[in-house]
Image 1: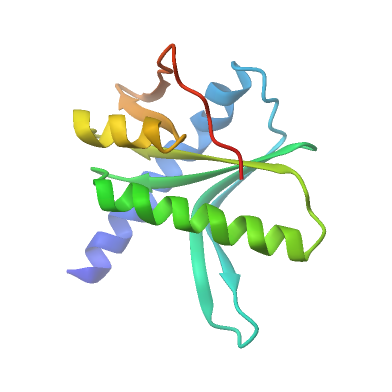
Image 2 (image 1 turned 30 degrees about the vertical axis):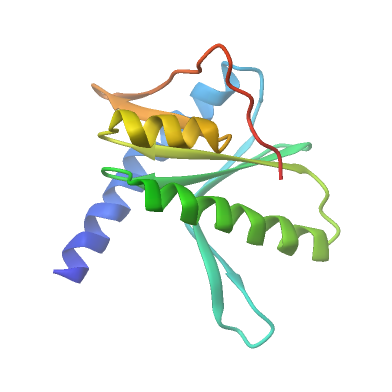
Length: 144
């Protein structure tokens, strides 16, 4: 069953990745690099500290996206921790670009969507054959 769940996750990432840059570019981000496929950050001993599903980049910003079929509150908390690890890792390598986060999913509950917004994460939700990016009027994206 674990392999089947992993395969669904890979499929979801590949379905989401092509449309994500377009959604953010409509907001003025102008990402020129999209890297799907699980970016691993390793510790000094070569152990995986965290993995990020999709990274979008431009000269001033990195957007780290976690993809879930049906996000849970726990997934949001874990993604915030991933963003903190990513910030620490980029600082060590002299990369001071702003880091922001997003959560993409096929099915969001109201609690999960609200929790993501409160954490300062963008929310991308499946809508037909594309992803929609709705931003509440009072939403302020968090920067790491």
